[in-house]
Image (tube, rainbow, N blue to C red; front, side):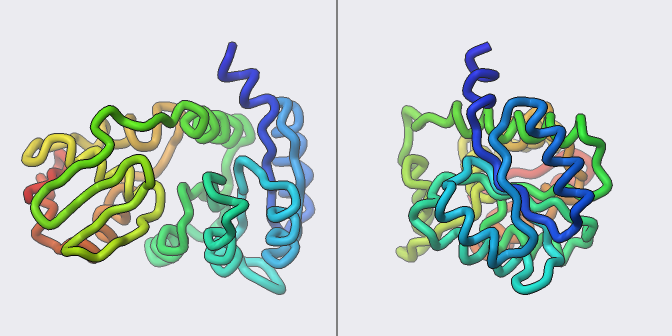
Length: 232
């Protein structure tokens, strides 16, 4: 009940150039008690995000004036949106589109079409995790050339500071809790994405691929048909 009360007051910015999407998705979110604001392109979304400071932004990719990728990249540079969750809601489910979204700081990626009840469930899960986030008892982790600061959501690798997109950071944090342990795909989805969030199997692969690009391919090992482990 406590989490539901928190969710009921959450502010959501819904951005899409399709009036039907704004109406249908907005209607279902308002029925759950959320404060819903809408925008029809990335430029308008930036202005409203600065003013409203939403807890969650649901962002389309293909839009006029300014697309979702550019808008997300700009939003991540705004201090007033620090801590705001950004998830894409788009018909484009190709790997390269997902990678582009995660590269500019998206937290999640929802592929259209999606049933309203499933979307609402994902929104609840995202907001619940945001409310329940708390500093870990061991908030600084050092593994060779890698230092993970869980309080500030940043890493230092080979003396170079990096800010990772939220899900990349959470995945790395999980794998490094027990270096050498193979984390099953189902376990990763449950811990990093939550039980109520339905994501495709490719989502983990995309995040691992990006982490390998940043930290080195030999930092992670794929156990075919099982999962992944951190090996340094």
